[in-house]
Length: 101
Image (cartoon, rainbow, N blue to C red):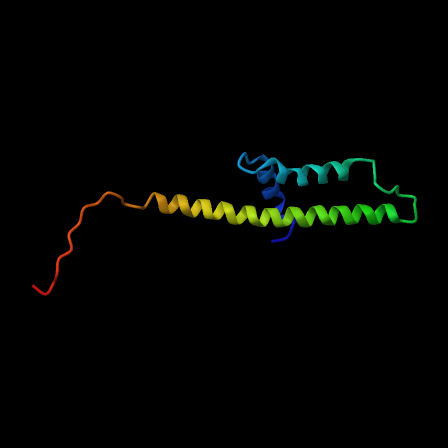
């Protein structure tokens, strides 16, 4: 799944109350850095300003992508557990009969 396709999932991830804030911070910091006019290295310095932007955004996007992949797996597992939990029959009495009688 490309990152463009993961954008709606990232929004869901951001507003999910079960996801810890420390994982959401990557999205928040990435958006702040992207929008902010402040750079670690200013743009006019021999194109190094562009390189640091690309490097930081690549780091943030790779971290976010791996977190979103884990989030997808966790949601699927929780969904499967819910589906199975509704189909389990408990507290049933039964007898085993031998067919050779």
